[in-house]
Image (tube, rainbow, N blue to C red; front, side, top):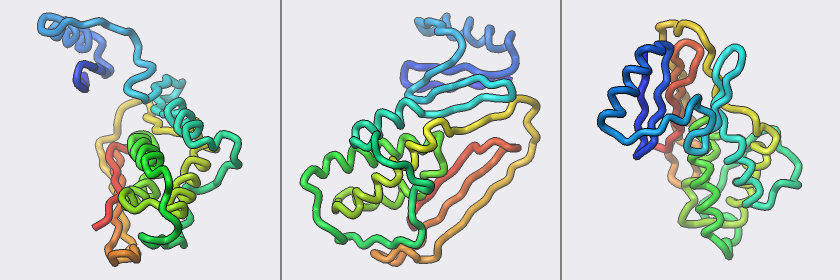
Length: 204
């Protein structure tokens, strides 16, 4: 099996069939001006590490740069990205003097959820305050960054071997826990065998 991912002018070709991969590269070379960069190690901010038992996708460098941008590199780590008993009001706190920093960091955190589904709920929560940003909201966003600081090497691990052809899916909802609009937040994650392939956290 050969898998092809096309993103603007970047292409990742991966699979277990070496002859098939060579055939795809040859065929694409007849259409596109291509340069083979060899084994994949870094792609659009995602680091690819080949381990003994599988493939690890992470965004350690990207997360580290984000922590530095927020000037939190000397702060103590947090063991969770979010305090789940906390309910945050839309207008709670004082409006930020530099709201563009909040937007920039939360937007960057959204990209980080590509390899860190463990922060998806927290990031979704603070995306809802993009237009009314206060010091209370920003303090909670900084907690996500402090959590990342202690878990920088974490990511998605895809185990080598034959994929078991079954799908497991898990979902949950908090039943109108969001206090500003009384709406539910639903989340799901889907596994193909032992590998997560799709996940989302979204307000109703």
